Figure 1 (cartoon, rainbow, N blue to C red):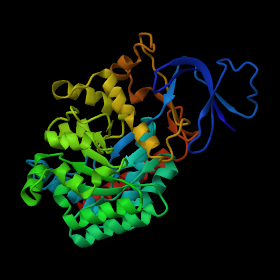
Figure 2: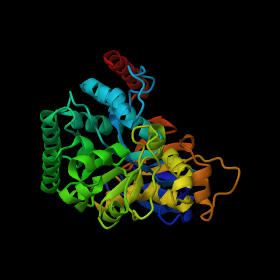
Figure 3: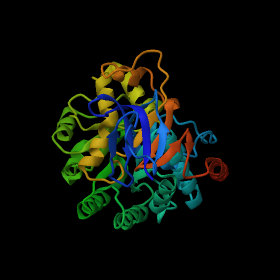
Figure 4: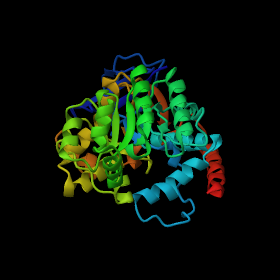
Length: 423
């Protein structure tokens, strides 16, 4: 049985062309859709499920360019023992304290909560960057299973770091190697200032061996640059370039706030991608993203702050008015660039049969000429009515279709309390 979205206003995500049509959605990873007459006259629909989309907008679903599953149970957690006074203390007293406390059930609950939140916010694909230093082995499979259970496609990595010793770094490398044997994924690194030359070289060797890319935080705070200059006598991007990190079109450089002109040139002239996380930067008070002279390979993420990509795009636009050369079309381009990253690198799970239906009750007309104005100033995740992932229902009438959301939220609350007790 196929899904037919009847009498929809279909917005082609690349050209913004609007067509009054019905869509028959093919199932399976990499599938697409067929455009049918809006009223379905003369079409045999006896074996299909027909959903009336009159007055609704249908377009390609969304995807998250950089997420952190491990932060999902942090909302409302106890305050740290010491109030952080800078970015390094935020890591030490909040996030590195939290990720060390995670066990398998907490990781599972975090992944389920993240996948459900992404789905309800219209994202059918998530690129995640995970850390659980005391539960490394099997952690990526736990996350993958949870995402598959909800119905959200994924591209995962484990955050390799020397901050807990070389043994933990090697465990992260092994977890990555094991996972990549049977799954699409990336080689994750925390950041230059917690990864020594030995671990960096091993990670790049694994990247080459598996034809993958590196996923790493870059110059999120000046501390990253200061450490690199002091210990390696070069800037962060220069160090990564020296080791070959920028050579892969699958490489993702998260944040990239504090870069000099040479670093910007190195990135611009490489096939690597940047992922901007505006709200996280504002929350951590580390600075503002500036896309100037970085090229076109810029996409957007949430950095674990939440799972709402419409919100991320709108904040990137508003926050960028002071320091970034970003207008409304550029905000939309960055929002959609993740699809180009996934397609260009032949990652499965983001085909044309990933769609979102928006029940957008605008007081003004929506046209091809003004859609981007609605995108920045009107649309929100509250307008999402249905979500289709790989041709199958993910969200229907605002309800998840593959899992019992109420039961899972009971489970996530139990795991959150266990986590908070450990903190």
